[in-house]
Image (cartoon, rainbow, N blue to C red; front, side, top):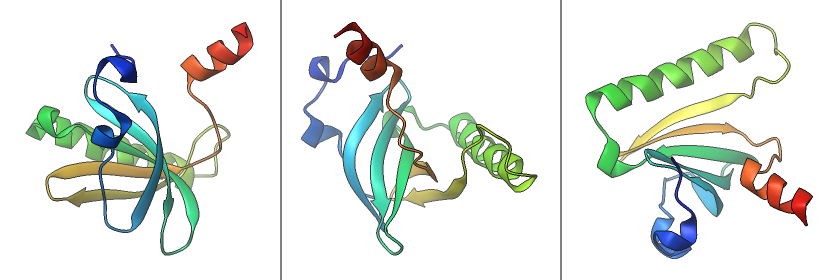
Length: 118
């Protein structure tokens, strides 16, 4: 279950740093992970970073994230399946675990619904 950002912490408190990436905005704040939009600094490629919240990191959660990364990467390598985004990397720094993904410019379901409702 996700919690609206305004009921948790300020956006500044929710932002983290991972070497090699610049974060621009928060796309999603869930119970176990956060999703950020940003840029890979070296190649200026837009990315989405799915970050496991530090307070939820367990060995099981680490394994699940690694499997998610491996499966996403494998599906893309096997023929550019429509609807499957690219997984650029699995980052682990200072206790933070993140999957760097292709940013195809999508918006959150919540934002799409708010836009549609006016």
